[in-house]
Length: 72
Image (cartoon, rainbow, N blue to C red; front, side, top):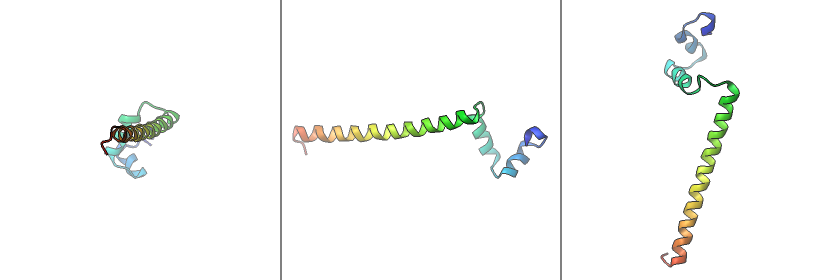
């Protein structure tokens, strides 16, 4: 829409987002193509899943360590 001569304010109003949201999105994803954005989101989701797995395993390790030392 902006490329068709509309202002950014008019364009974001037409798609139903605020200018702040538009500029935040543009700052984060502005140089990426749509397939790159999709891949980035997939990697972020995988990273979050792996962080949770590491946290769970660390907790299990601490519990087993305490049980083995008799401090339960």
